[in-house]
Image 1 (cartoon, helix red, strand yellow):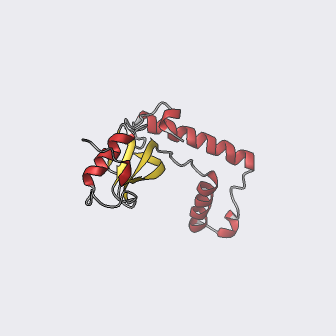
Image 2 (cartoon, rainbow, N blue to C red):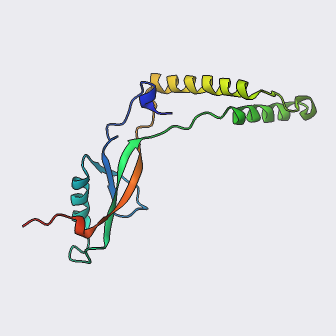
Image 3 (cartoon, helix red, strand yellow):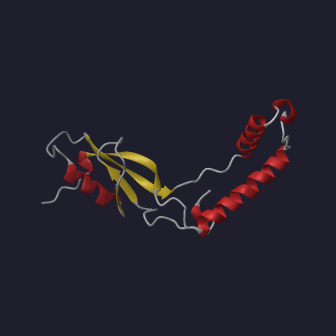
Length: 145
C-alpha cells in the first residue's frame, strides 16, 4: 500500500539517487542524479590514488515506501486471545471463525480505512526505500583536467 495509490503525501526524494560510503551505513544523502552521487562519493574517498577497481561507495534508486497491509487473520487471532484471557477459553474456542471471503472483505475494509486515515492526517512515511543498490568503483569517477 503506497501513498501515491491513495492521494497521500509522497516524499520529494522519490525518483532520486541515494548514496553512502559503506553499504551498512544509514543512507542519509541523496541527489537527483547518479553522476552527482558518484562525484560526492569521490569527495569522501580516503585514497583517491588507490586501486581503480576498489569500491568507494554505493548508490541506489529512491522509491516510495510500501506500507504493509493489515493482516485480518492476525487481528482476529489477537481478538480471540484477548477474549480467552477475559473469559473461558473453552467458550471462546475458535471465535470468530470467518471464511476466506469474509477475511478478504475485512482486510479490504481495514486497509481502505487505514489508507484514508493516513491520507487525512498526512501520516504516510516521509522516507524512501532503496532499490537496485549497486557499488561505485573508483574508476567510475570522472577525472577533471
